[in-house]
Image 1 (tube, helix red, strand yellow):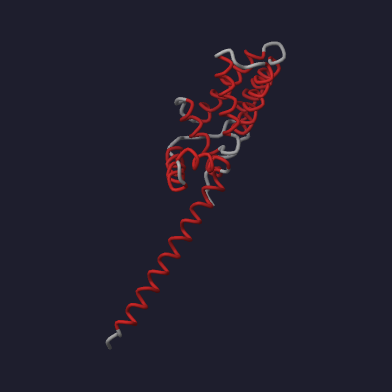
Image 2 (cartoon, helix red, strand yellow; image 1 turned 60 degrees about the vertical axis):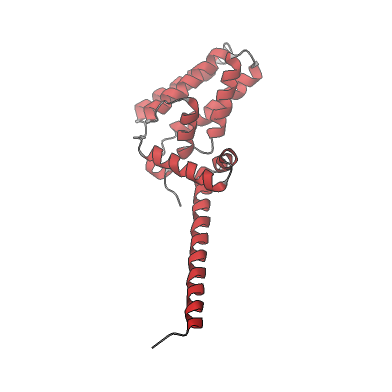
Length: 187
């Protein structure tokens, strides 16, 4: 049985259309999964990457990098020690705002290290944290920016108070005890 050349052309067009539809649907699902996973960090990546395709590649690379880390939950004693340390840091703010902010930054760094995040330079730490803590990563960046301004002599007490609030949101998120495997699931 021989097929008519017109019939072959129709079949080829239909197959190509199906392939295109499948590709579009897969791309939309990938985008939706990354948007859900990274929240506001997705748009930040789009803006810094220049396109959604580049942003998606950046975010997927971050996920792959962080999957190699040995992120762990804290045991109850460690959690209690960190919670107590944070309480002391916060109570210092009234008498020594500058010292409290420096201690808050150090406390967040130590908590990150204890959980298993590598202590690279700030931008890499923020990128790594954005995989498991995307909804508070902007707070971390804001707190860090205030701390840098403070070291340069350009931050007032209200700025330092805001830094403490920002650090606390990340600290609480890191301390909350979610299992890393559950945080990394992509729908």
